[in-house]
Image (cartoon, rainbow, N blue to C red; front, side):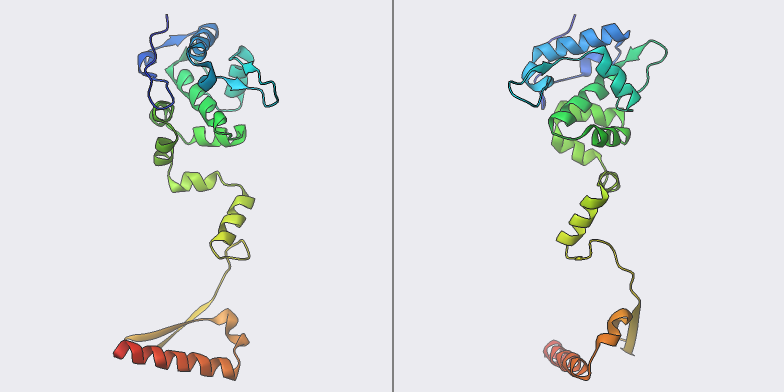
Length: 204
C-alpha cells in the first residue's frame, strides 16, 4: 500500500521508501501508484496533440537500465535506488532534457543528490553538480557559443606567447608576442603616449 505523498518541491517525498525492495512487477506497481497520485506532474506525455499519458511500463524500466539511467538490479531484486533514479530521470525529462543529457547527469549524481533533486527540485540539483560536471555535459557547439558570448570570437581557446618587459622592479608591461609584428611606428607612439598619460594620472 502506497503511503500518502508529502507535497514538497516536485510534490514527491521518497523518505517512506528507503528500505524498499521488490521485483520488477512490484517496482512498476509502486511507480504506477505514485504516477496516479499526481498524473499531470509525474507522467510523461506524447509531444503531439491531443497529448496522451505515457504510463510507466516494463519496457521503459529496461530501457532506463540499459541506458545507464537506472542501476542494474541485483539479480531480480530492485531497491530504493531504482525508485529514486527513475523519478530523477522523469523530472529531468519534464524539464526538456534529452535522454543522453539525463544519462550523463545521473551518472554524476549520488543517490542522496538524486533524492534531494526529486524532493526539492531544479535549484538543488544545480547546487549538487560541480562546475566541472556541468561543463562535461556541454556539447562542443555549446562550448563554442558560450566562448563567443564571453568575447572569444573564434569560439575556442587560442595559444599565445607572452613577453614581459620588466622596465623597473615595480613596473612591468605584458606583450602578446603573437601580435607584435602587427605594430607600426604610429601604434608604438600611441602606446607610449597612452602609458605616459596613465602614469601621470596614477602619480597624481
